Image (cartoon, rainbow, N blue to C red; front, side):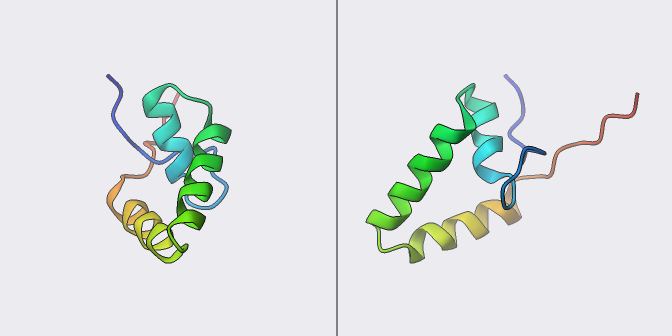
Length: 65
């Protein structure tokens, strides 16, 4: 299984797209689900979790060809 990293296909920090790539899902679905979950939980916990994931999940490795 691939390692979880932030994605270069980033809208903000690449967290949702990175999770989607890791799971093999569509990044748009993960982003919409994350926004809905954040809004339904009064937004603050979702923002806090996103910031923590942004710091914890490593950035994508540069592939030198």
